[in-house]
Structure formats: C-alpha cells, structure tokens
Image (cartoon, rainbow, N blue to C red; front, side, top):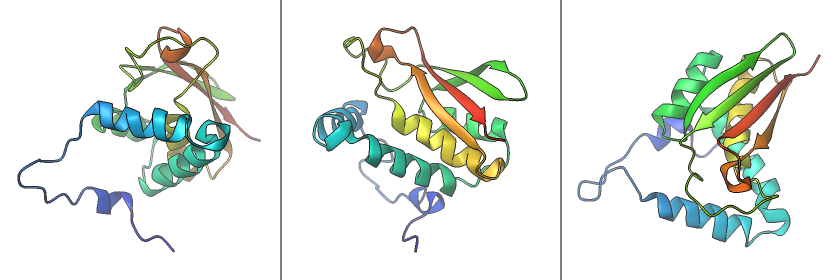
Amino acid sequence: MNLFTFEDMKKINRNTLGNFVPLELFRSIRLIGMYQGLPMRGKNTTITVGRKIGESMNASSLEEVLGLFEQLKIGIPHIIEQNENEIHIAVEDCFCEGLPVHVGNMVCDLEGAILEGALANIYDGKIHVQEVKCNVNGDKNCEYKITFIK
C-alpha cells in the first residue's frame, strides 16, 4: 500500500515558509542522519527510498526523467554517452557540490536510485544504475552509468 505518491508531495500549503527548505537541512538529513547514522552508510535505505520516489514520478521517457531531475533541483543532468547497452549521465550542480572532498566516498546513491526507479517504469525494470563519480570523491561531477539488463 502506498500512503503517499509523488503527486501528493506537490500539495504544499505553507503560507508563511513556502515550498523550500534549506539545502543544509537536506544535506544534514542525508549525510549526518543517514550516511553517518545508519548501518552501511544508509545505502540500503537510500536505495529503497530513491527507487520508490522514482517509481512514483510516473515519467514516460528518459528526457522527462532528466527534466524532472533539474526541475526538482536535484542537479542538471547531461547524457555524455549513450549506446544500446548503457547510458552515461553526468550531473552538474548536484546537492553535494561544495562539500569537503573525502576521497573514496560517493554519497549520491539516493539520486541514482531515483533515476533507477523512474527509468525502471520506462524500461520494464530491466536497468541498473550505478554511481561512478561523485563531487565528494573529488570528481568534477557526479556521474551515473545506466546499464540495460538483457
């Protein structure tokens, strides 16, 4: 049973504070609360949550998913390579940009799972998304490799 959907999340009635929360609050929830506070750096939780969010977006194309990514201010995605087996996406202006570099750490698994959940609806679940670069790791952009499962 789904208590809430992505469409429900758009129903905002905060007359004084509006529909935005500071990025530092989101970062704190993700990186202090989940990444540092949960076992396995919260990876199981963020992947489950991200997939569920992506699935509820009901996008019908890759372009629509990428547009939602930017519209929701998750980041600005660009396809940097695409063939029949995979798509490689770079995300500029990701939520983690500007954080201290911690080599060996990639923290944007939630965003990758959102991509996977949204694209699974389009490609009948026959995809896998992996974060391959991250600003926190010292990379220029966060990047994801989307592999089609045959």
